[in-house]
Amino acid sequence: MRIVVLVSGTGSNLQAVIDAVSSKELTVEIAAVGADREGTYGVERSAAAGIPTFVVDFKAYADRANWNAALAEAVAAYAPDVVVSSGFMRIVSADFIAAFNGRYLNTHPALLPAFPGAHGVRDAMAYGVKVTGCTVHWADAGVDTGPIIAQEAVAVLDSDTEETLHERIKVAERGLLVRTLGELAAGALPGL
Ligand code: GAR
Image (cartoon, rainbow, N blue to C red):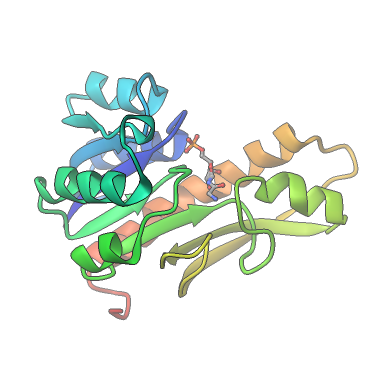
């Protein structure tokens, strides 16, 4: 299974995938890693691991439609079976997702459909939930919407800050993403 991973920042979930592939825990081919802006650590660490990288800078395009088309072209050049949004903080169009037969996987740091968006951890804490977690799902053109594949719960501690809670969620999230990719690669999950 060939994957292209899209990132906007640190790429620690991506690093877990890179590590799982290099330790042979996970059998997928990371064909490329792409970002929506220059200078992400996610792209830097991929290049260091010898993975092809590309940037389709959102700010360099006149409008979202042009950016989406350019992103689709850049991703399609690597002929992925699955495109993974791993901390990719942009919404892509329905056309983009259709170009990859709907196989656009997203990971989110909350138990969807609760707390979608860019601040899932902060919003869950502000609401006062005692349990939150992470979700891996097939993404559609909405904000963190689409069929759920796997979730894992994480308890919120009284002592938590957004940072400590997000870090614990990310530990669960990295495992969930690697396991889900493994199950997809093994054909062990139902298709779309
Ligand atoms: C992850 O927790 C991911 O779920 C979240 O951004 C973080 C990226 O971390 N994505 C979203 O909030 C999408 N709505 P990373 O760059 O260290 O993998």
